[in-house]
Image 1 (cartoon, one colour):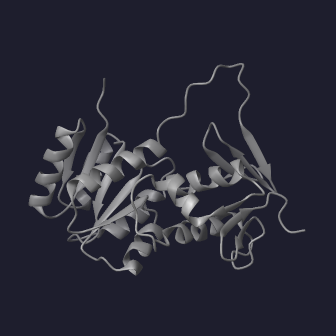
Image 2: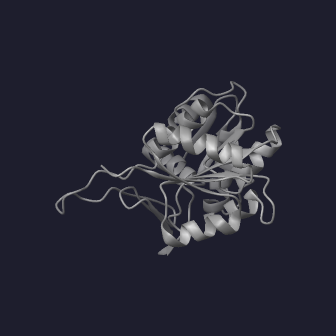
Length: 237
């Protein structure tokens, strides 16, 4: 059975060695890079299943790398590492397209748990027979193909990150139902989190920017005060 491949990019050789050795004992194939240029060389040879990316690196920093890689349709998930532990830093990391964020110093077991959770969410959908109809959901000018993991507007593809797509799939699968923030986070992350974690709001805002004509006055993803969110396929009444 082929092992999942993970690229670990960090300018600290000690962290690279520690993470690579630990993930290797857990059944993953791991290659490391000291900076963005080295990561690009790895990516040119083969795409991995996941990238672990340090925020603060010499040359091109992790935020710039994540933003650049996220512009490529179908790019694998990214977990951002950073010595910056403030909430605003985590929010920025998510806004540029990281699927998760882990502050330094970290326990390798927690990184492993997050890697497993992210990979579960991005696992390939089960193979479908030719006779199985595609799961297609339309709202407004948008069409979501749940099997192809694609979103189009008037026939034009809209590029989503893995996290954005997972959130959209949850919304369309639970249309017209109020969904709490805690429930959404449980569906998206699948591991222990801070009870005051507000990263779900960041993910919702990112998705709104791609499907709402006016993200400040959303027609589809509406805020339910004191609860969470409600996806309304019909849009504005």
